[in-house]
Length: 355
Image (cartoon, rainbow, N blue to C red; front, side, top):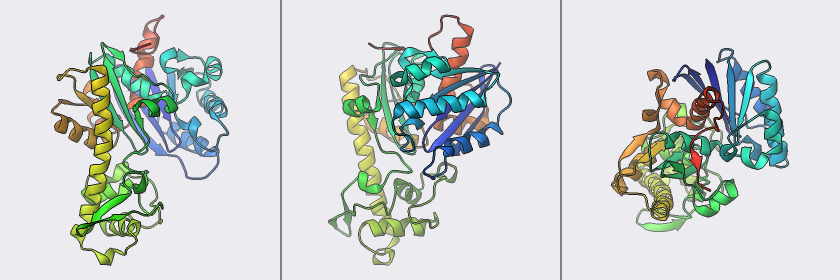
């Protein structure tokens, strides 16, 4: 049976093709920047050319939060209808997290379960492989920190608002996040100085300079619409300090980049430390890394003295698709969970969620 797992986000549309028990193909398509809901139609149109006719389509989403929609109800309804049209004549399941898989009709009635439930799919898959762990999924825009304890998804929050309150969601990632959201002061030539409250540079500029952001993880235009060379990234960071690139040497801008990177790691480590303590995770509980920024999760594991487990180690996947599969964990997870659901009449969509 061919299953296509979809993760429809406001910035990216991600898909994973499951053949039997193996992930055969993974793709990520950026949604256009235009302020119109048709950006989802455009991305989906591109995606459909990449996959065969499927027996089952399984969908999770965060795109309902896009400001092209007035509210989440409107967003969920639009995206569900979009997938109904795309999967006409094929089975369609919408992931409702704690509610399991839902029909399109039920999904419209259970917006609070469906909205932004993609993190739950990834965590539910982890519960099948680890009795306890901390899943750290660092993407282009956000970071999810989800404890797994006693083979259950041990999150206290569910909605984005609740998860932000609980420290289980950090609204910062490794590509689209403005650097001013990470630090308001940075050291420059021996002195701390303020950072402009402007989107002159993003964390993509930081990780281009550190060499950790590969080209395939960096599909978005830069803030100034210029190029993505090291020099152009340094120039954008310099502007954040009210300076021109010529006012510093290469080493100065590299130091600025490493400082921003350290601050982001510090934010994630503080949240991880709190969650590990809250759940009483043992020293043997690994950190499971997912997302295009999982190089930070690996560094976090080393700093905390914990084993690191890459998401790709939890699944069967063709070698060529392995790296992207870990970057698109929710799409992969929802495909695998839907396949499991389809094979068990009473299936509920994945690991248990602690109530």
